[in-house]
Amino acid sequence: MFKYLRYVFNDHFVLALLFIFGGLGLGYSNYLKSLPLHADYFYAKPLVALILVVTLQVGNLATLLKSADIVFISPKQAEMPSYLNKAFNHSLLFAWGFDILVMLCLAPFLLYATTFTSIQLIYLGLVVLSLKYLLLKRQYLALYQHKFAQLSYKLLLDVFFSLLICLGALYFNGLYFVLITAALGIYVERMVKQIQTQEVFLWEVAIANEQARMLVLYRFFNLFTDVPFLQAAAKRRKYLDRFLPRPKPKHPYHYLYWRALVRNGEYSDLIIRLNLLGAIILYFVHEPWLAFLVSILFIYMLGFQLMALYRHFDEIVFTHLYPVTEKQKLQAFQRVLQVTLGISALLFAVINSLQTNTWLLGGEIAVVLFLEIIGLTGPYLKSRLGKRA
Image 1: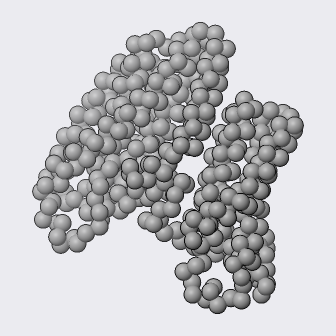
Image 2: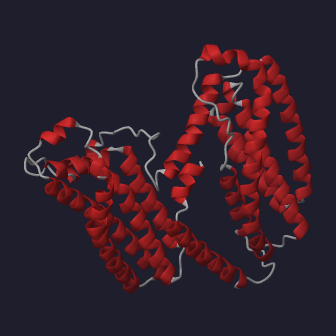
Image 3: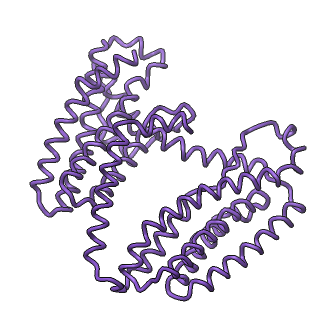
């Protein structure tokens, strides 16, 4: 994790995060100041409950198990409860840390926009921590019984039950729901001990769950650097063929790069995620300077990650037989990258125009982003490719 985090929190990204969170914090503070104290808005409590349920889904049980010979690891069955308890405590501490941060962010809003008191806020916080404990225990039980891993159980326990408890703690006396979740925690703990003595540990399920958890982390790291563990599957996406260029003998790489960009899940998912995330952030940004900064940052991140596409076909021996020069290959890649980044720039400019109700800001951002694209696909691209050569 530390190996990849140093690429995530590099100097540029840390500086951008300081501006982004500073701007969001300032906007949040100004919004709270505009609210009358204890206004008790009708939408406040349902909104907080929804946010809490969504954030409760963050953080899964980390067992750190890896694929191994099942004959070798099966004798370790009796030792797994002790190991899983340590893994559970480790996962719970990290999850609780995130939930406490969320509660600290929501606390001012609850105190201003509702009639909540400090003691009710403490009760709600305890309910949230108890719910996270129960959610992780559900994942724990899924390592022994398949039914707890079913989608119906996930929706019932992780979403609907959590939403019901959060709404109850928000609208009624939170102490009652603290006691309810605590009693459920004691019951679930007894159930876990009973199941561990009666059921066989599901090694394949546990390993598959851990691989899925790590895949989420690797996909996040892949936004900032190349991760060799990711192997995205190619998808045909025939419905997009009409929008892609036809094969031409003189421009084979123009044809190849577009199809790799559309059909390879690593690149297409990256484009969708960054554009969607950038659009959502820009929609809630009211400061023009912050909108400029966020737009420039996301175009840079997208362009930086897509530069790996240039070497995508280097491992295929047949591409080295093409009568195409390196200059023609670079020009084809520049055109593909310019069009892709240009579409993202237009999207960000339109979002800013809709958010501010003025096309002037959107036009200014579009000009700045197109200048950035020229720099990224020109001198910067050549310098990056030169370093990798």
